[in-house]
Structure formats: C-alpha cells, structure tokens
Length: 114
Length: 109
Image (cartoon, rainbow over the protein chains, first blue to last red):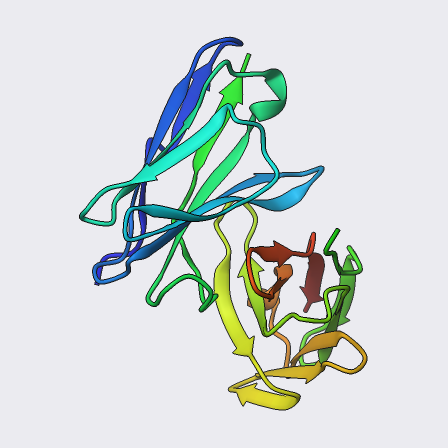
C-alpha cells in the first residue's frame, strides 16, 4: 500500500513569491492535514480537510491556504513568501473523520525562502 | 494556549536499558494521545496511540496515560541504537492536534 506522497520534496523560492505544495493521501484515507515544522517552533498544525471541507485551522496568517479535491488529494498554498516561511511542510492522512488522530505522514516538502 | 511539554533532552541511555520519555499537557479535555518517532531528516512515524488511563504495551514499547495528572509517558525496553531519534508527544482534544517539541533519545552501544 503506497504511503502519503508529497511533491515537490525540495524547493527554493524568493521573498514575495508564492508556492503550491501537493499531497496524495494513503488510498482510502479521507482526512488530510498539514503541518509546518521548524527547529524553533517544532511541529505546528496548519489546517485539516475532510471531504473537501476545511474542518480545522491553526494559528497561521491568511497567506497560508489549502484545499482538498474529491479524490482526497490536497494542496496548500503560501502566498507572498517571507523568510520565516522556510520550513519542512508535512502532510498527514488519517483513515477516519476528523479527530481520530492517528496520522501517517509524508516525507515532507522542504521550502527554502531566500 | 494548549500546550504539550517535553524535556528536549538529549536523553542518553546505554543499549539494553529502559528509556523513559515523558510528556505533560495542559488541555484537560484532551482525549487522544500519541507518540511519534522522528529520525533525523525524516518525517514522524506513529509508534503508539493511547486513549484511556493505564498502560498499553506493543512489543518493546509501553505507553502510560494518567489523565488526572495530565501526564503521558513512553517506555522503551531493551533500547537499541536504532531507537536513537526524536520522540514527539501529540495530544488531541476536540479540535486540532498539538505536538510537543520532542525529546531526543540517544542509545549508545
């Protein structure tokens, strides 16, 4: 069974640009959540989707957005990039509805903002 | 502000010893508790989940939960060098999951 797939794995952007990251969950998983991981702040929740609807959102500015498609694949977008957005962005899928909690992470997309 | 606290370590134990990792949380309505292992440069991997007070064992791993004390721990028996990683505690209440910053475990031969 294939795991969670995230693309791209690495990317370099400059300040002010925007970026779109993609996540394909484990087959059959309908919940997808996104996280930002940095050495200073640890793993922080961005948002969570189930059945194409955003169910929960973390404490991030509106520059961070996401969506989920009917096949459960998800994308997140960061606009007007700032240096502080440099981080590992992790996507996780889970089997049940929002709240079951057992997360299966992808390998992440490492974003560097110059 | 819901918080999950972990000692950052590093916790250094000899091979074959028991490693004890601890986590406290502030949100009393928390219902689900998880331990994830993260190797350097890799993504977190689920080790254990626990939902009710007491102990839950899975192989060399035992998770312990005490909701009254708002405390969850992970014991690793017969620690191996391959257990060297950062261990993240995660807590989930009604809404979003909250992660601790992790404890670095080093198992030396």
